[in-house]
Length: 251
Length: 199
Ligand SMILES: [Zn+2]
Ligand SMILES: [Zn+2]
Image (cartoon, rainbow over all chains, first blue to last red; front, side, top):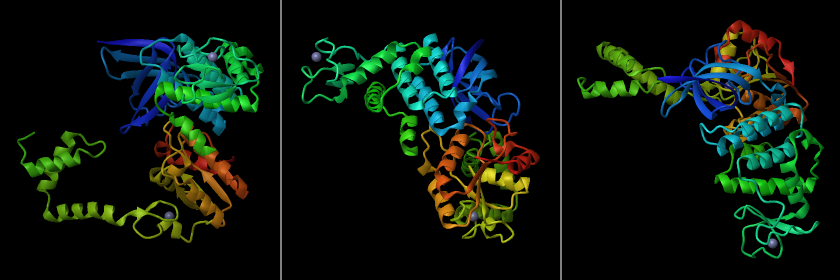
């Protein structure tokens, strides 16, 4: 017996499969990440065209047999294609990074409405013209927080004291947060950052999405944030993301 | 399946590796070949070897060719100053079938893809830039599929060709988003090339 599911979803990615089908990964509002097959999608002009592309926000109906295996995609209707994202290479790359990061950090069939709303809102913000690099950092801290991997940025993870402003402190991915000058060990894997960077990121993690655009990250904070969050995410996932590498090749 | 003699089995196995060929079709084809004349089997075998040995990528446009430079690149009836960039030879063939386009081509080796990690070095972008650099090209038409990777590729090509001050155009929409040029009818594809817009 196979059950029928109806939900809204975001297309994470899709690839051609065989002569005429496509395999599609969705992040659904009600069932988390699911992987399905859209039969005949490559040739059919009407049924799926337009709705199986990455970053599409869709209404989805799919069937799934019990046990392992792919879902069968019955209907996929476009709600919003976020077409502005596709007009700029930097924005496409940022959106790709969002969906890849989310996809790597969640498991199939684990519902998380907060994560769903987060990525939907961030794609919407990119579509509205928000600056891709800054909003990539905001997306990282917000997503890590929602999924329970929030880095500790307010207090030293060892002595628990808040670092003085305008000092150099360290970020340790292994400790999951900042370490002050007094507590850092000489042979520890660490990234030197300014206390202001930790503060800005902690603030971003607490700020509501509708106020995020008021938060401006100065160039140094942006540079340090990229390094420390990138390092932390690589440490958590144990690998480099393809869209991240891509970002470097297009310069 | 063991009721077939081993050489037949081997042929069936090889044939069923072909796209769209199941075991049943493979068996039918194998039996057909077995029953056909020696001449046919020899000619089939020779054709198979020839495509592998004689067909190479054209050093100018990367179309497949059995000569050094392909016949599109050497055709004196085509314009030298317009180059149409396509994802693969299937899309080149689709545009040729649509007719109307009388310039040259540049066949990429796929599309840029942030999600698949396919970067400019993987798809002969540098070769395209070199052609523009050294030749008298006045327009590059980007005829990649209207999907995310196709758009990313078009945007990147526009960016790297900007310093040369030539016209970079993109085939018109009207082709449904997310579709493949290979499956678009010739008339629609012809119109899309005709109605290309500047990037
Ligand atoms: Zn400390
Ligand atoms: Zn050629």
